[in-house]
Length: 244
Image 1 (tube, rainbow, N blue to C red):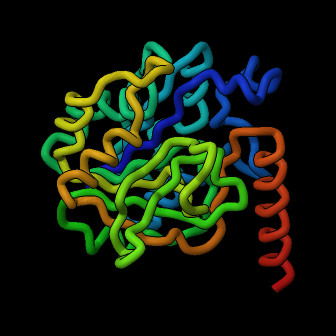
Image 2 (cartoon, one colour; image 1 turned 120 degrees about the horizontal axis):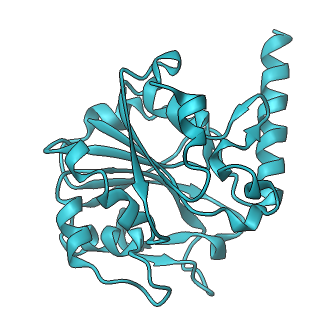
Image 3 (cartoon, one colour; image 1 turned 180 degrees about the horizontal axis):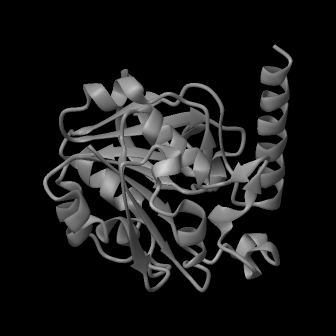
């Protein structure tokens, strides 16, 4: 299985910090934000990784990640997303890198101590998304679960005003190779982007979307409040480990 980390965008919600570097290179306690999704993949045994980035500071990744060997990556590639085309558009740039493999995808602003090794090893086909209960579901893609069988997802709704649940799509996904055909088949949303929610709903239509809860800590660090929360969590965890 290949790994893809999506680290593009301009990070406008974090201006002026992101006027000087890419959002995913901002510090979360004692390491750059992107180290966390890298560690999640490497811990699960995924060491063939592509970073998809963009914007004016994309070159900064090279000086920090280098060839990835210091972080446990065996093979590291980069792809450049020219425009703000959405998550699915960014993932489409990894088509040749993934080839005929399946792929684990993580958004670059996800910080988590979850261990996804078992879901990765158990994955065979279709798609698996990781959900997490959140207090503010209107900020996320939200899963509507079948009331008669909570293991089944009826649909995913992007940032609903009236959420059906508080089970958020975390930004950690596993896809088989169909994902690139589904990306080709969807059309840009009202904001002009190819939405990963539309790709996930293609899997729903085929009865091939499953889910599991992302165990442990998870938070996206894409706003000042969530960046602060993530920093506080990892600082406290590090201090707790030092005191053992």
